[in-house]
Image 1: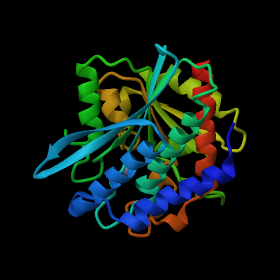
Image 2: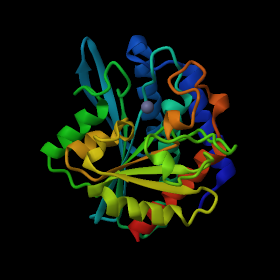
Image 3: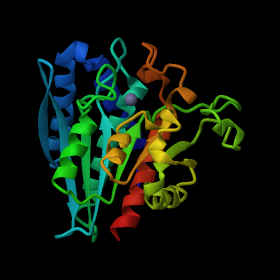
Image 4: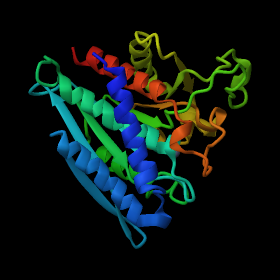
Length: 298
Ligand SMILES: [Zn+2]
């Protein structure tokens, strides 16, 4: 199923394009936000994957969520969404946050599009790249994911689960390099940062269990699940991304993450650059996602 070397090469190219060719993708450099949007749109077009943009206003700017879709079967039974924000914090090129996630999103789409012809599947996967997530937009109604989730709720869209990719490119392997929010550090979670975290709320427990079950089949990438009550309001660190917008609109959603500042010392700093990422770790995540979709589509 997976071709790890080819996937590594693709992931590197995406991260390089977003962080080096384009660079900072914040509201302070709006032209680069537009370039990132165009990069994502052209990628899907070139692969023959259906794509459109959903523009909206933020102050004097017009930004856009990019929406692509791959459908298997004539009237798919299951609908999933993979989301990731493509902007970066001002003053940073955002390799882990969040070029890593866009790279995994695009590569997962490419992989799925390859199975399309021969697969007898029954599944629809929507890929949404959100325009804005970082401050000063974070927590406001202008977050790309809030704009999208609000509209999806209004239209009563069928969605069996949303997978948010938030910082998925950093690993560390020395004992103690992985930290946890209080009070989780006492609960016996792994001390090395070589796993992908699956963060879920109570409503999404079953969905996150099916993700974990699939991910366990990929023995090259350990997965660790964390379920938080009250949509995560008691542990604010677990709300720090686009999945929370879907939780708040009543959808099932999980966040897949390297755990951000609990692992990556470059979080929100100019040193969050492409050379700090672990591309094999990211490629293994693409493989795990393929296993999940393959399970669900059968
Ligand atoms: Zn982020």
